Length: 151
Ligand SMILES: [Ca+2]
Ligand SMILES: [Ca+2]
Ligand SMILES: [Ca+2]
Image (tube, rainbow, N blue to C red; front, top):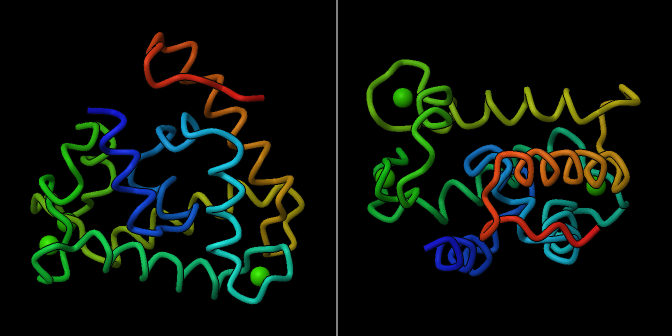
């Protein structure tokens, strides 16, 4: 189940920020190599940082890739049964699905949290630091199958 979900994320070519917003810490279990690939996917201009415009573009790409029925909303089925608490937090108007605005709002919050240097962009190091924390949290939460921190 876990592995299947991970494969789906990967094959949809969704960037790092999408992964973090929708699957939360789950992305960390995929490890450093995947994290690096996801960063590069999100870094549209290849300058080794992710800025807000790239975040929005990456979010849009991820959103479209997941929206199987093309109704511009992500429901629980399209997200493959996301963690209930996480879904509830993202679904701000509580209509049972996630709009692009809801997903993006969450991404921007995460972006600000990750941007430790407060320069408006995310570096590889800032993202890696977050990824390590998330992985440690997962390990602490005793989910051995999903938790193989490779760092
Ligand atoms: Ca960039
Ligand atoms: Ca949909
Ligand atoms: Ca909603």
